[in-house]
Image (cartoon, rainbow, N blue to C red; front, top):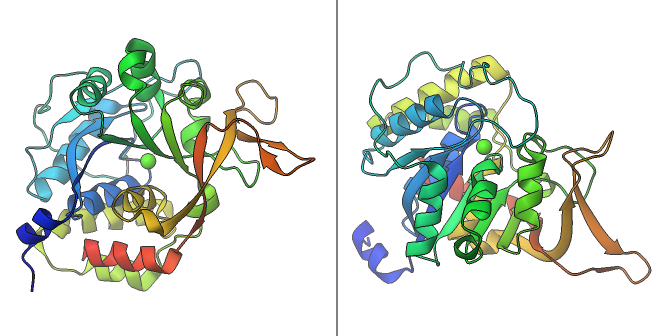
Length: 304
Ligand SMILES: [Ca+2]
């Protein structure tokens, strides 16, 4: 059997920062744990975004502590969308019964943290699994630095018209990111909706019995009691793609974010030349298909 450290020596390690809205859907926590359990990935930091980011930071730190990685910095980011209205008093993570009562371990603002990470290591990947407010602000603050950034984001949909959550929460931020010229890979509902856990998968996670999974099991139980449905692995698929790119089929596309439409605000719109069935000047690599069974197997192996 090859030791974990030996594996780390022979595989190419990809450094990532995860920009997350952990605390609403359970899939952010599942995605972060998947990243921590992937020897191909080195998590250089987490940044929090959308609504009550102080609370999200506490939850992220609690999760890192459960997995014995309190050394990973968690930088708190922007709660308010650029222009969209949201209820800033609403409490995310209201399904969680307690929070870690400690000071944040990173005093740097998430936007500055992201810029600094890309400045120091342009090969780093930002895994964006929440609304794109922090990343849009980083682009506006340091466009030359962020032009080098590699963003892999969960969000949007190109095969149907639907206002996906991460885009619709801050369409203007998404429009800035899609129009920025950065290397952008979009893992949208087109593929993530195919990746659902079944009850027996959840039971295996809940009853794993390892000390580090006890906290995740508690989150999962409380979230399912509140949401009344099984997890869909939107954010974990985005993380799995970083260690196993062959899980997704990608195609270059030209995609814009609709910010004005009466019925279409927050939707991602694909531009196509319908006469010759070809994309126009492309700005995004978009996931068009997923090896679902291979992904679910990988996900469960890594979590368990
Ligand atoms: Ca998320």
